[in-house]
Length: 417
Ligand code: LLP
Image (tube, rainbow, N blue to C red):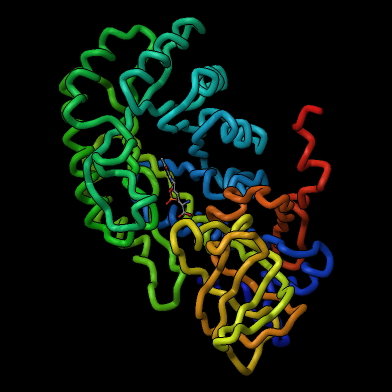
């Protein structure tokens, strides 16, 4: 849900901070992502405040929104970055993040990704299999260094969330199985170029119940004891991300302080620096996707369709996870209607809402699709020859373009004629 102080209604029109969304649509066109800079800052600060009693460091998970300005806004406040590939590492470095403030994850990092991470001097590479540890050892040996490595454990905790974003269960591909840990520890002892500095987990995303974190943290604490007993000087204890946000007014998110209340007493026992990797919590409600109503039509059964100029190519979450996003008219209305809000892509799954009560908008009007700051623009694509949208960041009364809209030329630029 939007913070109404950062997305206020002024003169009957929705604004982002001090700037009217209508003016932004006029200037930059639609579909358009509009990000509130102060929302990013507030969320980061709220997270830091909740865990302020703890020796910790926060690494924003850039996969949620990797725009360079988003990364930079957070990095300027001291936040680090969690990256999942060479490409995300490149982005973080381009945004000016120092390598010692970057940790590198990924269940399938290539040798090139690993070499790039080691050469860049990231704080920690997180390994997810014995085979990957061997590749890290070999590459670090060739480069003549000892790589700082954390191992991601699969704690076998099945958190309640959408099955596609549940990662801490042993049925999923992530992390090293608990049963393999003794072998993995023995193997690392034989490796000259791997220094085991951290333990890591990430149980999933959009998790409301603090119990799952507690259960997984308790398991990771057992692994910490085992690792130290095996002679490893573990400095980092990484509990991942996954902290929830509200998308629907009827489903408020568990406050971040509740997670802190539950976890801090456990984490204080580690005698290690605690690492966090929030993504969605920081960016989800910082942005809206502005879209224009192209056409309205009604079928023989009286069903209304509102066809807008944004589609699953810009926000795939409803199609992929059946996610709910609030949709409001930019100009306030007195009357409502029940309609399907759908995009222009030739797939029946291309919808933002079905049978939704929305403002009775007319053709040419603007709608704002809310909570579009995480896993929206980063998952956008050119399917159907669509141009990925422009992005604007608002800070008070000022708006700046932070990503240009794709062009037709870009659609074919990598093809070899
Ligand atoms: N750390 C790791 C290792 C991760 O895999 C993820 C997310 C995060 C941190 C950040 O999780 P967050 O705090 O944002 O929940 N596209 C899906 C979400 C995929 C999450 C992938 N991993 C969605 O739109 O819901």
